[in-house]
Length: 262
Image (cartoon, rainbow, N blue to C red; front, side, top):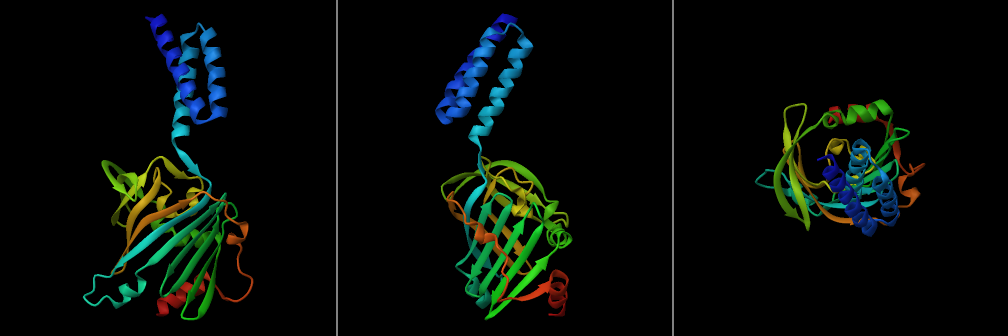
């Protein structure tokens, strides 16, 4: 019985090595080396260990890690009002995410203006740039400010379902995001695409894949994001520079007081 198991495991290792070799030459070479060792082994425990290493390797090949690139979402806004003039002004909005190592930048652009969030997950430096009605505002955030801003989304628990749906050419899976305040929303994601810098958006830190479509509510408004483009081209480091002039600068606390005043 043990001999048959050994033979079976060695056959799996060999086939996996050939498959990985076609997908990735470097990994393939490594697995052929493992197979050579396995073929000489007489210990079932050692063969079993290598078998699981192969399975783990195949999993890593199947999943693409996005460490640098650009992701674009089309944004549709629903106001729920009978006279959605404000919603009409926001139609055609886009959200563009730039990624490079520990750096992330999100540009939300609509007919009303632009809001840019730049964050470095290593240094915890962040700014929010707002450009509306000819005014340019830069809000500086400390590490504590960033945590406070994202507190509502950082502890989201995802309920993964077996439901599938094709969106924008992607075969997605449905997940239900349960927020700490009791609210929930639906996310369609692809598990074979993952952003390396999980801190790029606190909403999806615990999601096991890249969100393709999701809806977020803010007051009476509902924002539906649908992916429209993914580019793996290099992103300029300058995209993540904080402006040194041209903006009215205020702290996160000052901006929060201003919001409450309105």
